[in-house]
Image (cartoon, rainbow, N blue to C red; front, side):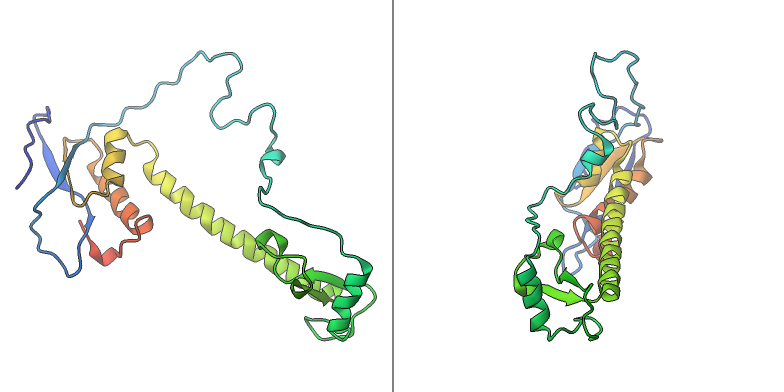
Length: 217
């Protein structure tokens, strides 16, 4: 049964059913229960001309921090300098051959962590290998590229999710992130129905991991 729309004080009320996940097997088009949210047009926030003494503007860093100090890894990394004895043991276990290309280890060979400390590796002998300079540079460059690629992809996904919700008012946000089954929106012209519908479908697919073929819009 369609919920009453008497609570909406707009003379021209439009009703839009937003995307929701269909149960498996595919349910009938009839919706037995819906949650109703009334949308209102988003109004831009007024920026205050006066600010409290010592207040930090949005997006700025506190005076006690710099841009470099915020880019600090907070995990537990117990890096230490390997002794000459440990280095010799690693090379001896490899018969003084490079673990990468198999050439005879030069005097300038490098001791490398197979799994980097930043990714949870340890300083144990089972996680150490001897590499020639060329193989060590190649491995370090490849790991740095992989880490930056995964970080860029993760930040892009987070940024896209934030951009979908940016500028929405409280009613629009509630309609996008509502997870209580089907949703019916009662809204007038110019209240952002299309944007809410698009953002809700993206939220179901990206955040709730709902298969796109199960979303009805």
